[in-house]
Amino acid sequence: MCGRFLTEEDDEMDALIELSRIGDAFKYGEVFPTNIVPVVTGAGTAAAMKWGFPGFAPGKPPLINARSETIATTRTFRKSFFERKCLVPATAYYEWRPLPSKKKDKYEFALADRKLIFMAGIYTENGEFAILTRDATPEFRDIHERMPVIIPRERHAEWFNGKDVQENVTELEFAKV
Image 1 (cartoon, one colour):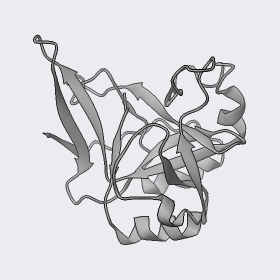
Image 2 (cartoon, one colour; image 1 turned 30 degrees about the vertical axis):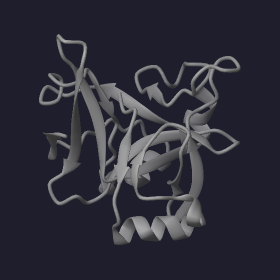
Image 3 (cartoon, rainbow, N blue to C red; image 1 turned 90 degrees about the vertical axis):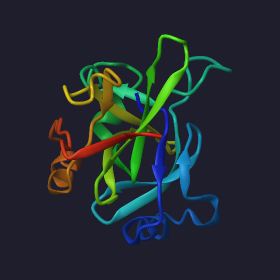
Image 4 (cartoon, rainbow, N blue to C red; image 1 turned 135 degrees about the horizontal axis):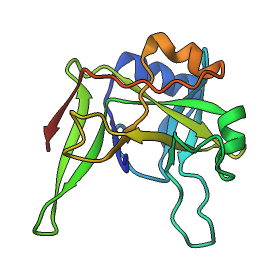
């Protein structure tokens, strides 16, 4: 789940870019693992961070997602979960559905009004983050079995204050791209 997401120009995103002091290092568009993006680190705070915890060994790919069901007990993510939560703003995220021909269809998930969604995340002391995932809800399961944990705006404070929020924005729409 969530191997790519999208950011589009938006007043709220512009404010997060300024607050994070990411400057010219950030470009709107499709975000790939290891890209540096603005991440919300608490009420009124943001920082520029790199997508992906360090891999298990040199040369291994970064760990870009963390299963929400096991995050509190997984050695790699446990400390960050309890001490360094964040929210990852995005206009949309992408999933790929495998086809019998070994090709994949790409789907975009976004709100109908293209407003930002906020994916639950955790980060390291060195400024690397991972996105929390959960089992997909029935409406999305045909495309992919996992999806990001999306924290609705009215629940952001709960997320930062230690509540184990497992919300999903059901008004997300998806389109094949």
